[in-house]
Amino acid sequence: MPKYLFRSRYNPEGAQGLLREGGTGRRAAAQRTIESLGGRIESFYYAFGGTDLFTIAELPDNASAAAINLVIAATGTISSETVVLLTPEEVDEAAAKQPDFRRPGA
Image 1 (cartoon, one colour):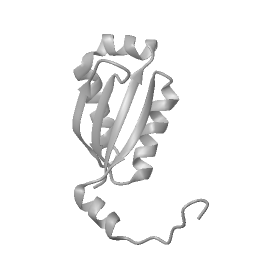
Image 2: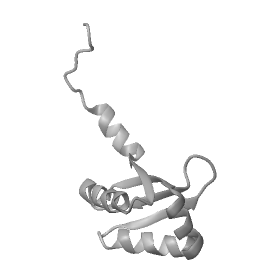
Image 3: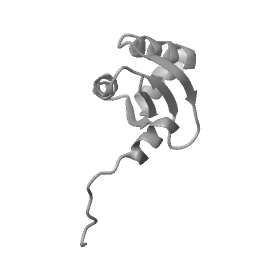
Image 4: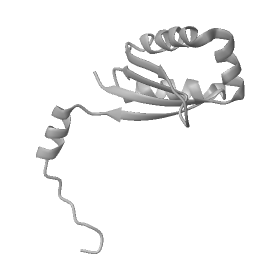
């Protein structure tokens, strides 16, 4: 199953919700959301700095990851960026492919 890294940042309203529910409450909510699409959370960590939350999740497909981003964005309380994660084997597979490509200006 494909893996995705969600980097999220709370706005002030979202941070107020986090203060009310706590970190474990928000983790449980995220787990329910991801499981409702047939996925599972692999890791869930809060952080200091520009990103407030890092979540790695397995999901069935890109459409499921996009659905999560849509419902998150619709709340207006969290902004999120999603990164598709690749295994070393998938990188090997990509490196073995020979696409027909011409660099710009060549």
